[in-house]
Image 1 (cartoon, protein in one colour):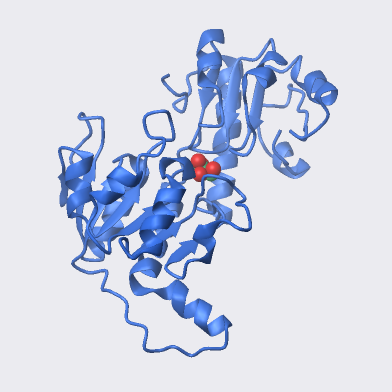
Image 2 (image 1 turned 90 degrees about the vertical axis):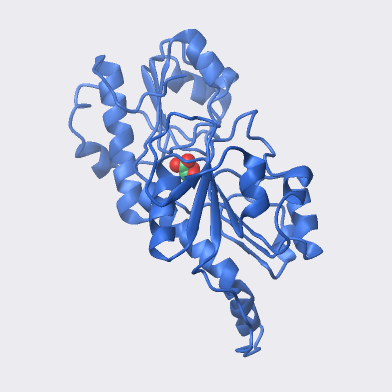
Amino acid sequence: MVPLAAPQIAWFEGLDDCELVLVDPQAPTGELAAALEPAAAVLVNSHVRVDSPLLAMAPHLRAISTVSVGFDHIDTRVAVERGISVTTTPVLSDAVADLTMALMTMALRRLGEAMRDLSNGVWSNEILGADVRGKLLFLVGFGRIAREVAARALAAKMHVCAYDVRDDLEPMPGVERVASLADGLSRADVVSLHVDLNPTTHHLLDDAAIAMMRPGAVVINTARGGTIDQAALYRALACGQLGAAGLDVLEREPPDPNEPLLSLANVVVLPHIGSATTETRLAMLECAMTNVVACVRGNPCAHVLQL
Ligand code: DGY
């Protein structure tokens, strides 16, 4: 169900005796159902909603392989009930961490404002940003991507602290683990989100959480838009309570053209391109295909979610 080019399928070993069917997820229901009825596995990206009506069209499904690390587009409850394996592609940490640092630098140095001015014909070289060095970065979630961000931030001479609901995570030299979300929020200069979107993280940053943050703090989100109450973020940025935001993800993608956040000078918005490098996207595709082969053949697969 992802738009694969034929040569990419051809070079992939292990699927030679399988039939591969490419379907547009927007295709009429009949067409979708005909393709899904015999399917042992589906390969999707994060834009395809794998919900219960779609899963009902695939009675023989054994695996859902998503070309993404996020899996909030998949109804995992139904997958668990039916014993369907769900696999992801956790091979994008460097690309997303690079983009996180880029957004953080843009926000702190006010690069978005400078670029906007320039495209409006204004040469505003008196814009003063803030140093990256010496700032306290709070990582909300301390998984693979957050650890890559931490490594880069420490190299940029930032202080780094992190919070994660899992307390069995390996410590990382130079990174302070804080005991609560509130503790990190109340101290940080920059808060960067690295959590899955699920009912417990939906609107994790809401009015109440934002109220705990330091005046002028910066918010970075390269995880999922739904982790932030966008209206609350807008209010805090518009009145100067927060200093800036760098967002690669939004609650609604693509956003309504009248989305108020898009009008703010202190906000940089990117179109969900955290993993969008040629190397990373190819690695993700290869990983997703390998996951399909393993699951369909009944072989061990390291990327099956433990749901
Ligand atoms: C991911 O892999 O989850 C990226 O955000 C792309 O959706």
